[in-house]
Image (cartoon, rainbow, N blue to C red; front, side, top):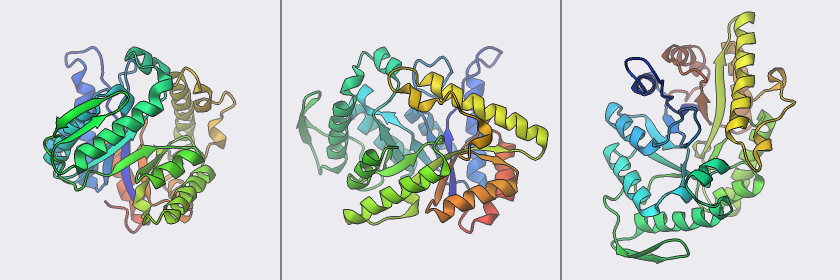
Length: 332
């Protein structure tokens, strides 16, 4: 089993350093993760939240490319319906080149209605815009030279995307998915799979099985590193720390539900949620966390992306020292 990180910086408003301190702390956090042997960092992209979530993931990852040497740099995800696909292809290829071929290119359709409203993009057009954007990006990265595209939303005549990405034919594509249909689509269309931090363990194991079975049906070779399972991380060594961690977990779930407001948001926030019955996070003592990871491993999970609600280099160090050694391939 190998481990990466998932999430992003949070800008800290006020004080002499202004917003930059939150980003500076996060960059140090990622650099420490690399030193400790973590495989990757996947950054979110969100807009208009009021919670200071990362909005320019490719920009931040480009800076991290200069500060790191081995850790893979992922987007989770670039929401394609809001972007010009040729510009995205150019920016992502530049990042892949600068990083020496370390980009994991995660893409998605988006799910927060107020973000679509903010960009003046109808949410009901998300799927068709996503599909067309991906068609353009695939063509941009696999064409030998110039190419043209004439679709419903985008028209490009005799253009060439420069630079070419370092990874050939292109960086790995990752897709966030949860439903059986979307997971099967990811397998059929050549995506790796990102699974969320909320789904319980049994659901995660079932989704991994669906992906693996669909890969077999279409003749696609399967590797456990093709599925990244996102899990919250909260190490608690005492009863008091456990209670605090459980309270934090409840708040995390509420925040996710609040930020997902709009049509369909109810699936992200269960009013009957209780943290005590939640087996999704890696919450507890190091021994309890190892046990939860072993259960995932037995269910076919080989790649876990950690979400720390309060990113701390000390927590990473504890995880690397006390939990990673239980997994033979734990260091990336």
